[in-house]
Amino acid sequence: MSEDNERELIDRAQAGEAVAFERLAEQHAARLWRCALALGKDGHWAEDLAQETLVEAWRSLARFDSRCKFSTWLYGILRHRFLKGRPNQKAARHSSPDALGQVPCTAHTPSRSAEASEDAGRIRRAVASLPEAHRLVVELRFFAGATLDEIAAALGCPLGTVKSRLHHALEKLRQMNLEVNLFTSTGESRDSKP
Image 1: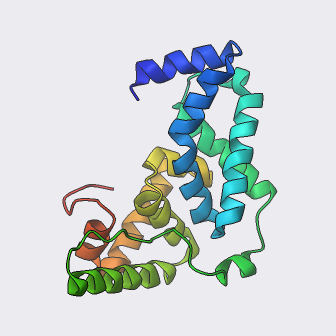
Image 2: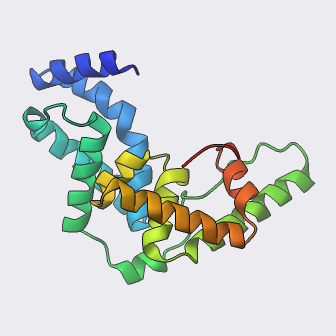
């Protein structure tokens, strides 16, 4: 969606048009869910958090003033809702693996499928071994697809801190020989900059 189209939808939604807000919500729901999943590690809780974020966004839409991107504003609401109702962190760490980090397999042979699955497992284990602050940034950036600004809004920290954490996390992953696999398995190119 172009910025002009989004701005038009925001204006219509702020004027009370529910259908316009529904279209905005459709555009952002999947990324909000992935971000919530990265924060809380529980698929059901992430679904609730994403929905609560959208409900609160609808209720407070009049306060959105375009000083930041709409998505960044949504991530700020998500962060606030997350901190308000944070799930038990011990339970979240021991929950079964969820969609986060699952890499769809596009290989055509069983050996390529097994190799891709093994690589995805190595990546998930390596990312899980990072300190929480670094792990969250990597998961939000590469698995949830959030921009650096959106990550800063979601975590409530300065953009420079996000960049620093991402740099240190990627350096640790590179030391584990995961540079190529991390980028290729998540759809990022090797030359892409965080």
